[in-house]
Length: 406
Image (tube, rainbow, N blue to C red; front, side, top):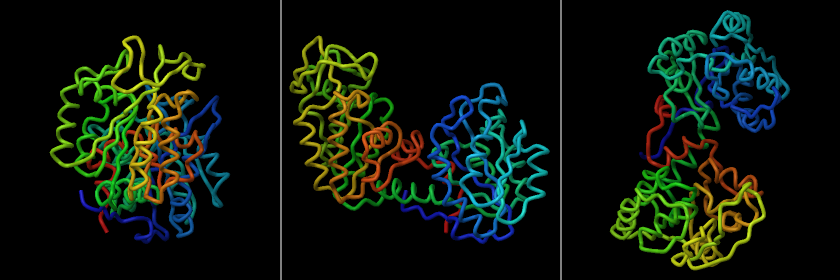
């Protein structure tokens, strides 16, 4: 993958034209009330740009995982209502169980330039996956007179659904919104065209979740740092005593291969040199817990590693100091527990203190950075969990692939 250069909302003339925008309004709801509207706020730059330029905007999104077609608790109405409070134009919510029903058609037929129609949850249609979603893709295209599709939901870009990819072949023009553009720019180009030295940091629990990411990043980065639960499988692969720490025994050979691959490619692979250990995993997760620190290769048989130790924190922080690009995916320990969050905080602090481009690859690391108060110090925090991982694996995401190049 070379540098991606996709058409974006600034490259298209939308005046008086119908524009379908795939947004990510998958907001958390409690008793029908939105508990966090970040995702709606994040979509505003794209929406406002289209409003200013006189487009007729139709928004679609999924929300939650409705099992058997339409369920009121997964309705997008609360999101549409919140959007109406945030924008300076008319917002109509089209409540249709089929998503593109009579209400949607009527609302679109009556809308004026600069107005917005919000469709019902796309997952109310069981055939969102394009294997059988061709009909739905066509309906979405027809609804906007087959004019323009703007993809701005990075978190869903790895899914080949009707509303993320399928609809593209039923419109004349495609573009990405500002959110997608930023993800492509930071996440894509940090990995594909990094300013060097490029340090990649991987954490999280399982090696299995990151197999292809580890392999792909070793080819791209100068240093690969591995922390979190997955580090213990790498340590065991090197013959270290890891006690009762999390281990993926089926992946020991893979870890050995990756250690060899790093040597062959002349890349630095850094593993923890000490560990913060305890008798058992904290239960509940934020419970008070008694810990001690030992060398990473000498964890007692009845103890488990739950965070990196102070020497490792220093080792990892020093490596980040000299970097020009840093990509981080996955925490260094059980960051939800204050006693076991120190490693993750140390890495976040190191990233906050550097003038390198710092990209946080979604999921738990994004949650950790936000929760620990470092969000404003990072160059970019990805909005996609699964999508970020697939991007870091070097995969082409269907929701990006369908958008025209400049």
